[in-house]
Image 1 (cartoon, rainbow, N blue to C red):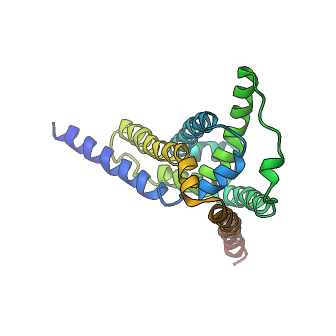
Image 2 (cartoon, helix red, strand yellow):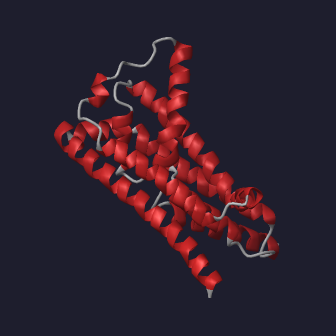
Length: 231
């Protein structure tokens, strides 16, 4: 019985650790205007479908990163700083494209296909890139998730507690992502077009800076290893 209490305590501790580590960097409120910009022309129902798909994709990415992220990197011979550099460059490119996007760019695009199958394929293609990766779950949150999974104490508790904590913590993060995007449209209407356009520009610039910072973090770690090897 005491071992069961210890396992439950470990489950709650690990779940809170995952949520606490990921919450500050996964899908902040500043992503709302970018989400609205990238889904210009879609109906409220289509945005709701996208929100659900993004949440499911984000959950899968986070769970995989926590549980087997280190094994995947080891299999391909990739280090965590390299993931930061590559992912940071991707975030930088997305931020630059959004920052230089014309104000009427979304309005100039044609509306998505009307047939149910074409519409489903259209939404599915938009849901992962760039709305899930790197906007919602970017290289920063993936790096943190991998680090959380890698830093667990070896033999310090039942294996099932990590799996359950990863599922519980990542499910909570996916729920937050879903609610954020699900109610993005009423939030955007409450803010207004002019203010939203300003927020979009600021959010795009912040996203660009985040990408540069992630690249710098990874590059610094790589340069430090080179310096240590030369000593």
